[in-house]
Length: 395
Image (cartoon, rainbow, N blue to C red; front, top):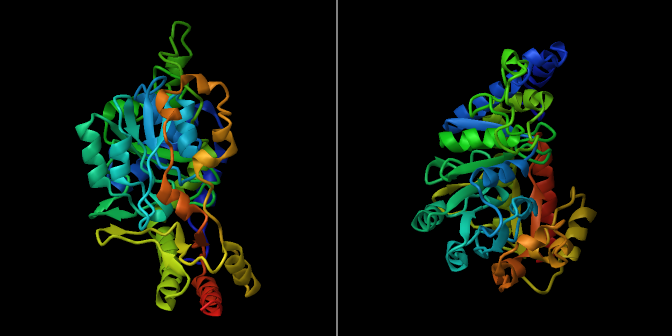
């Protein structure tokens, strides 16, 4: 296993794209190879590549016809992109609280947020761990609600033996540079629904008539004809560039090794935290789940120590640093000020209802997110030793 992140066919595939001179006759060929490889690894029928992991979610919501007057349930403790995708669809985000031990969106809170206007749920597989998908899917089916899995942080995580991303109606993944796999930027939606895949492809490809789930390219002899009617629906130019697809394809070929690196590092950090029985408590991993460790999440379990004091001591001892959790989405300035670029006029009455999520509010300011992107295990072990020294300092 390499001690580098980019060690496969990335340069080879980039050269293949560059050698085409970006001629239209070669367009989307790398994208199709990447999509097929990703879908095959996850055991699903369709993969549709997008420019990023927010466009993926927006495209899925649009493909379902979700818009003005509709509500989509999301967690407040995650990257705000999940909520942005809902707002971009002119729908209303409704926040469900999290489980205080697993940090995942809470099914009971979801149930309490469902109204006659709820059209979709976006459970986020936060930090590399799966939500309780069986219960969420049951709620969704009982209420005729769609489920879009946001798995930007979870590649090859497992839930009851199933790969996370294969249980919802569709799933979104990101290839932004912090993720398990990266092409600098990019995203993909996977699904087994033929009609949904066709609709998503048109949404991300300017509504072109000639594209489909299996093809992101219109034949040259077709598009060159003067009578060709190009656009059958409105759409966005969300297609993933061929150069990014080339890198992503090479990353998919090494997906198991790349994910295992994160898992190895994550378990090293987790063991240190658990064995010390100190001021940090790790994310609970249910027995039926397998964590993929985008990060190691642990919260400060005492009021006698501040977040800043622990972080500063960790860095003083030589730690690489540690990330905090995002502000809760509904506590961000854009949300408090309804700076929605005109979309505030589409919000339902649920927007003004109680949005409080007490578990998320208690946990957010206490969370430490330790890096796992150490491709050299020696570096991970060194950082874990520094973390151990920091914990012992405060015992």
